[in-house]
Length: 306
Image (cartoon, rainbow, N blue to C red):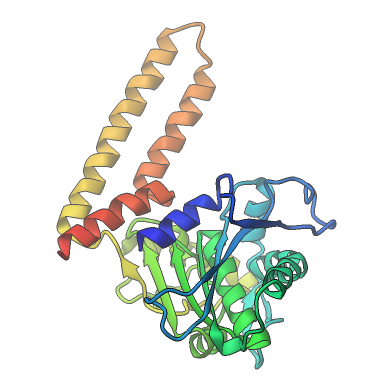
């Protein structure tokens, strides 16, 4: 678990010496030449004793949302026919466009890396992909793509990933990539989007409200009927985790109020900037989506099960 989480975190940071990097190169997007667009890190290793059915493991880590272009990708939520796999599956337009923007250069780099290795049958290759937020959605699309077009086996681990497609896509994906772990935080909003309370194991107040607010807009743009590809592992489902979350929210809100009040008394401070920064911190505490929150809750989750 921690190995995959650290790999997902590295997608936001400088790559290590033995990793290769691919950035999106779609010239139709503003800012496509910038490094803050779409990114995947890759690494090819010899399979160890923990992977008995493979000779080579391809590790992939897809970066999540870091720019306005990425945010626009998340908002292009219309369901469109899938360009990956077979059948009549529908997928999130923005996620599919983002993956296809990476795909040509990504597959080219992967081919070049594999060409330097001894000849392998597809069944001897295991793909292990991970990603946080948008990166989780891209990781799932990459697994489906490489299973169907290359014949690789695949495993996928996602952190706070949104829904990617409809029920037909979920069935297609589950058949191709049966080994998927989808980790979520209970109070993280992103895994509940695009909203569909009928797709929740036990929809809470937040999920029902989101579905009520977003049902009409989603249906208007053709974004109704999203389904997750597998059940989630909720990292903060325990009473202790809920109490810890509430305490963190209260503590952050108190600190925010104190900092905003201090800025108001300090005529040299940029009160608007301080206020916006404290609102951001409070929102992050209330709706824990950052990888820091996932790491903290993962530690608590595993400690409770020892």
